[in-house]
Length: 368
Ligand SMILES: NC(=O)c1ccc[n+]([C@@H]2O[C@H](COP(=O)([O-])OP(=O)(O)OC[C@H]3O[C@@H](n4cnc5c(N)ncnc54)[C@H](O)[C@@H]3O)[C@@H](O)[C@H]2O)c1
Picture 1: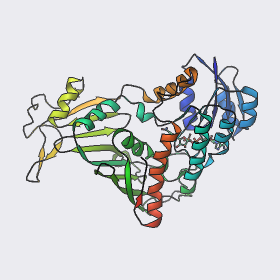
Picture 2: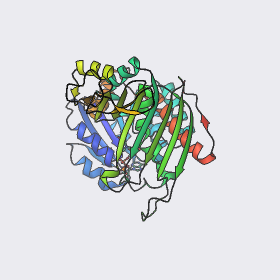
Picture 3: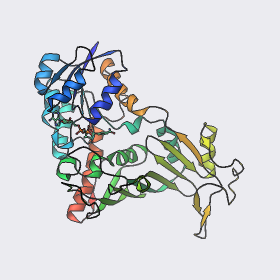
């Protein structure tokens, strides 16, 4: 049986551990955290697993066949280089690092060692990926709009941009990544950030809100906005809209995909989506119960098609972990949807936004 070790026994470490506890074809041998009690509390949940505060000692004593890394964004480097030196395949949480040059050096070492790697972009494993891709294939997307408005996550390092990278890099990178995966590569970004709206949070030193304009390789444009100023649920919003001439797809990552517009919704309905119009609106007449479309005169009209709602059914987070573990067991990494080399491009996309904010200039990207 292959042996697995985990470094970083915090929030995301616990999420992965919950998955491991359901897998009976791997042996979880070690947990490492700088805070000994955290590693110990994880080790208590797995028979024969040991707790460590020194990852090298854990590697020496447990000789893992694979590694999960769930540490804060500014802590990367040493662990990855040591895993590569020992040829231990690793799954690493996003963002890969805060320093692009460091992530590039890790990537070069991974490629040289021919190591299997994966990054925690679990959204790529959702059941919504295929219908969303089909929508994009069948409808020419002109504009992408992304909103991710929420509050401040609990991790102590989060509110310090120097440690977290800021919200785009640490959190909304999921949306930036899925846009790349589903749609197109960005070629240029321009980002504004603002502060001063979040009040009374000790040690707070990051952007409250950012808005990024993106130009994509194929000519489409996007606006990607993300904020952490919300203090009540009613201020929270999370939606990625792919807008085409006569229809649109609204993706709430890991939750649902709503297709609005008769043709797009019709295709999804045939594939088993849930209609949430009144069923009589299939002809696309005005006055239906659904979303809005702009007609030729520029005015807003109800689409007449309430759209079709598809729900995520894959348990994407489990599938993401499982795909990496299966790859290590079989030695075939081809099913991994986010190897280190690709996750590096999403990091570059988000770090370009930070650079644009710092310089007040657009930043060009060449991600291939
Ligand atoms: N894929 C996702 O959806 C998802 C969700 C949450 C967090 N994350 C990512 O996971 C990472 C960790 O986030 P979190 O919320 O679990 O943070 P956390 O603070 O809850 O946990 C991190 C843990 O790592 C430990 N740690 C710090 N430096 C270490 C080091 N050098 N060696 C060993 N242990 C170390 C800390 O003591 C802590 O217990 C972040 O990069 C975050 O972006 C991903």
